[in-house]
Length: 269
Image 1 (cartoon, helix red, strand yellow):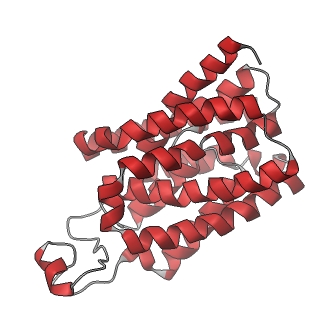
Image 2: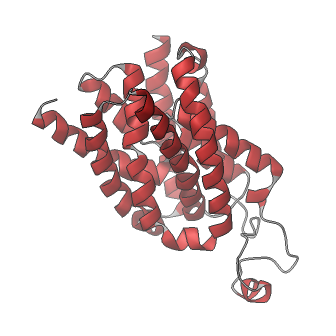
C-alpha cells in the first residue's frame, strides 16, 4: 500500500468515525474505501471491523457523561457484544457471504426508518447506581419506579443478536442497534447512541481478536482506519449533544437508506 492510499484511508477513517458514532454507519464510508484501495471483500469486511474499533475508544472517551448515566446497562451490553462478536466472526469465516447478502439491504432500510420513532417524554426510566430518592429527584427514575426498558428480556435478546450480526457482517449494525434502542424507548438519542457504541464496539473488539488469530486482516488498511476512526469518533459526541435530536434522527435515517441503496445495487445488480 502506497503512502497516499494510507493517507486516504486515514481520512476515510476520520469520516467513518464521526459518522459511525453519530448515526451508526461507519461502513458507509470505510467499507467502500477499503475496496477502493484493492482490499478483497472478505478481508475488507474483517479489516473494517478491526479498524472501526477506534470508534469504540474515541466514542467512549467522548460520551463519558452519557455512559456514566447508564453505567450498569453499558456493562451488560458490553458483555453481550464480546460474546456475540466472537460468534459472528466465526460465522463470517465459516459461511458464504451470500447467505445474508440478499437480506441485508431491506434489513438496513427498515432499521433506518425505525430510527425516526422517538420515545415519549418519561417513557424511558434509566437505572441508577446511586440512592433511589436522589435519582428520582434528578429525574432519572419515575415516581412509580418503572423498570429500565433497556434491561427487558426482549431487549437483551435483540442486543445479543445484533452483536452477532455486528461481528459477522457489520454494515448497518449501528443503524439497526439505534433502531432497536429507539423503538424500545431506552432513552434520548444521545444516550442510546452511546449505548449503541458500547454494544457494537465490544462486538467489534472480540471479532477483531478472532480475525487477527486467523490472519484475515489487511494490517496497513486496518491501522489507517483505526487512527482515523479514533479521531473522528472522539469529536462526534460533542456534536451529537448540540444538534437537535430530530435532526440527528433524520440524518441517521437518510444515511441508513443510502447504505441500503448502495448494498442493494452491489448485491442485486
